Amino acid sequence: MSEQLTLQPIDSVTGVVHLPGSKSISNRALLLAAMAKGTTTLTNLLDSDDIRHMLAALQQVGVSVRLSADKTCCDIDGLAGPLRGGSECVKLFLGNAGTAMRPLCAALTLTQGMYQLTGEPRMEERPIGPLVDALRQSGAQIDYLKNDGYPPVKIIGSGLSGGTVTIDGSVSSQFLTAFLMAAPLAARPTTIEINGELVSKPYIDITLKMMARFGVDVENHDYQRFVVPTGIGYQSPGQFLVEGDASSASYFLAAGAMKGDVTVQGVGRLSMQGDVVFADVLAQMGADIEWGDDYIRARHVKPLQAVDLDLNAIPDAAMTLATVALVAQGTTAIRNVYNWRVKETDRLAAMACELRKLGAVVEEGQDYLLVTPVTKLQHAAINTYNDHRIAMCFSLVALTGTAVTINDPGCTSKTFPDYFQQFARITND
Ligand SMILES: O=C(O)C1=C[C@@H](OP(=O)(O)O)[C@@H](O)[C@H](O)C1
Ligand SMILES: C=C(OP(=O)(O)O)C(=O)O
Image (cartoon, rainbow, N blue to C red; front, side):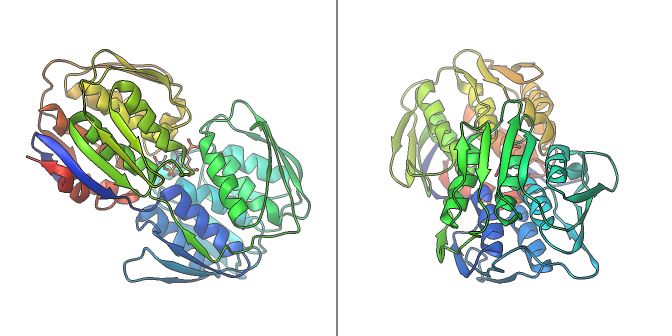
């Protein structure tokens, strides 16, 4: 039987949490630094499974990386161009890291090598078809090794031609992010047209800001069309500080809003991550929120009220709202989150199932979740489906006056290996 962690009811939470580095920024920074001219020193790099997979893959394709003993500081000697393969087929295992699988799939088409990209069983159920379709329009040779539209894939690098391509933006923004980051090294400039409504838009802002930090400016025509120049190539910015992870911040901010006073250090009003607006959601519910340049403080000052929101822009932090809803007055609606179904697990089904075990009243729609609390929740053992965010979200149940058992708490290693230690540090019981 896998490990379990039982959290007893928590009276209140107080304290300051120094956030680990952002997953989204860490993996983008590593790949951009690898293709850039010059050496980049990354600080506050996240040390977690997703980043480990990206680092290992980069080392397998010719990138020299020097990691500090605590693995949060990293020097990367850029290749001043595409990654490198050998004459043999290189097998890259990428776990369940979407931010490694999708961007590397695009970047490796620029090389002259041959690669197989594989991952955990769940990765084989997470789509990659829209990205492969777009890359093929630019001349890439990619084959599916098992099921059409899904990893594992085989890439025969031969470069990207550039020109105009169309990409489906309705399932994951990571497909567009991946293409954008590869496009500056194509033979000609690329115009990317978006089919369907682009989801998770703020992640594209992260991509564009980071590409700009590495010297490449992309034209964004209202998230419908992007024009990427060639010929400039990526330039190392020298030093690059990775912001704290705004999705990881959501659990601590939620805890403060529910029952105490918590400050997260490492993200604030200057953040490039869309997920910081989760603090505005908490403010709308009645929490007192204070913004600094690189901190956010959340305080409970009165009972929280339910909200009804379209959270397509912040799919990861939106999950946190599902457990905050357990103490809000009224029915909380989390809308337009269809793509929860294609992430670490089917998150709409999983959240609905586990919230019901606690006694909450839940309606699961095709792309929404309605959560209505009950006066007294019941203790339950929460299945986490190998989904770090389910484990972290349900830790908040301990703030409702009910104990909660988290099955397989170690699954937080995807993005936040010591989450439960950090959570324990802010609890007063
Ligand atoms: O680009 C990124 O860094 C991410 C984009 C989002 O995915 P989708 O675009 O698939 O929603 C998010 O859920 C994921 O955790 C990280
Ligand atoms: C969806 C997530 O991960 P990935 O980067 O693998 O898509 C997540 O971290 O919630």
